[in-house]
Length: 159
Length: 264
Image 1 (cartoon, helix red, strand yellow):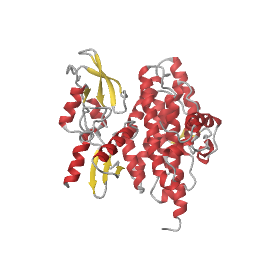
Image 2 (image 1 turned 180 degrees about the vertical axis):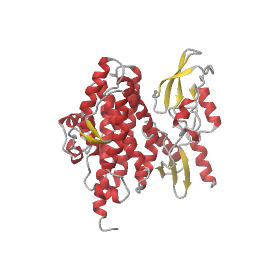
Image 3 (image 1 turned 120 degrees about the vertical axis):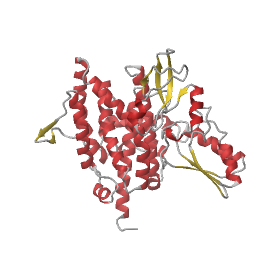
Image 4 (image 1 turned 30 degrees about the vertical axis):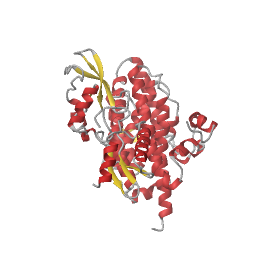
């Protein structure tokens, strides 16, 4: 990786995810690659195809890289391989928990197993929780209820 | 370029357009439950599903762009309703919640099977997009199938409503498998396994679920083989639509057409 590419990665690492502001685009693993030659090319892979934050994210990438001195910013979308919650690093899972969202289970592609494991409450750590709805306030979240602290909470939806 | 390249592109375009328009129009119908669903959880679920389906139509329209030279927005907001290629099934009004649930289940199962097949497609774009959409769609099918199983076997009223919905929706649903113009080329090119194969797989998968809660579909069984005992509601793929689509498209395009090119 060139020094210029390193600098672009660092800049993208400062852009917060609009829906989960404690995580950056790099931590969310939606940036797949950076190539600098005459201009700059960013390889982008959305979480959910229909995520309404995608437009805002692309605009922010353009504007930050313009400020870094790149007049031409090309953003290419890729689905190979498709984005998965399995790509999130361990420390990112901890940040999600601190933010109040239960992290996704590992090995999301094994759907039945991923949904069969207990989901500890991110507030009180009780294992006495249940899913209220597999759909939530955004495409990437599910609604749970904790019998321990009698609060509802959200979980990052395994994908 | 092979001599039949133009014809094959035509068949591919027909296929992509059918995929995109089905998702867009069903997504629009699902969105009509936002604020109106029987319970809050279903309001959230159908709003999420609507958002997904519309987003999925966007990627199919994007794959069409090299052929049509039209952006997804232009495809959605500038076409006349008679230029849409969705099946009639997705254009009908949302009906009661039983009809919505049955329609969603019959659609989701067809979509899952189609996407699974397309992950083996010889066409890179179709293969790549299908691999992306398949895990997302899984949540829709689990939800709609779960509702069919619960409402199909709950109270007298729910059973009656669900049966009425199956009777109406089943012939309409067969319209999803209307043969496309040039479909043989898609099959021989390894692009798509074809609607005949897809329909047979779909019957194998949806009938046991309906039967598990005593819902009867208009089919007859002899010696283990299934025969359709109703008239499939074809027409949508050759752009012969029911007037409900006109109403839907006019609603959808009203703001865009009032000030073309406006930005905010």
